[in-house]
Length: 344
Image 1 (cartoon, rainbow, N blue to C red):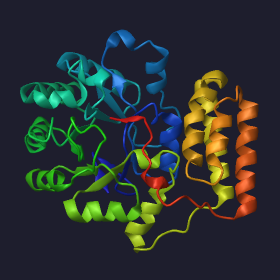
Image 2 (image 1 turned 30 degrees about the horizontal axis):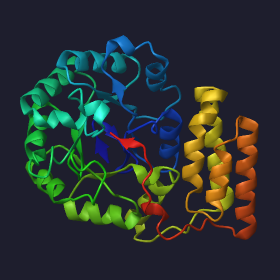
Image 3 (image 1 turned 45 degrees about the vertical axis):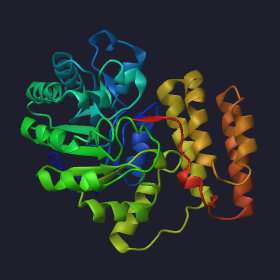
Image 4 (image 1 turned 120 degrees about the horizontal axis):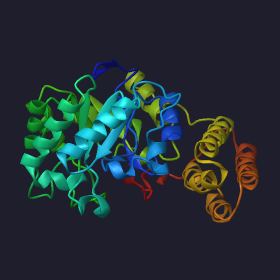
């Protein structure tokens, strides 16, 4: 797929998720089949550029191209500066967040709250595109502010006219948060109105659902968020299904044990051991959710204080699974469980 000047391996995208899509997770998803992985959002407040969190989010060392960084804010000049700042530090695509429904973002009129002010949307998009003339800019947003005000078609036209190279649309309004089911009619309508690539997002939890959404909307690609938490191999499963029409068998327990182990090692190295142990807990929880014996395991694991005890518990858990069977077996509804992190 051609996207924002890059040739991608496929049309599968990792949604930007606060507290989730750090560099280790992005690298893992790309390794397991994603064409693009968008970073968790970076503030446009220059006063925070020196913070440890912002520095980590701007760290792309060793990351596979293309490097897409999402910025968030409500002031055109600050957003333009944030775009330049990240482009200077390795961002190859700048993505603008107008999709996050979190109160702490929307209360300062950023994220999806911006959809209420279409003239401001235009000013922000034009300012960012102008600020980084040699870096493609993309936009993620929702179907509207609420169900009575689904202005995604208008925002999409503004984006195209402003020089935005591609758009991703979550099939819910800001008021919906993550409740109910995503709808794809609005995305299908937008696809008929603009010539730039349209990426569909929302409730894409299986290879079959990915194909359905692509067929139904005519979208150029799909973006997977929460379903990839603890199951980053979902991208190769979707890739295979779209190419062949056949499902891959569940992964081997031994392979996922190794995937989890390598992911944890990257987290410890990226955050340092103390912070890495804390960040790793949620990922271990997601890796094991829905597997036999995982509830008791997660309860005990969340109280383990250090790297050695964490790794020992993970090895023991997957060792028991391997003794019970070669391949992972999930409860029927495990793919539908909704982790608590926020997709931007």
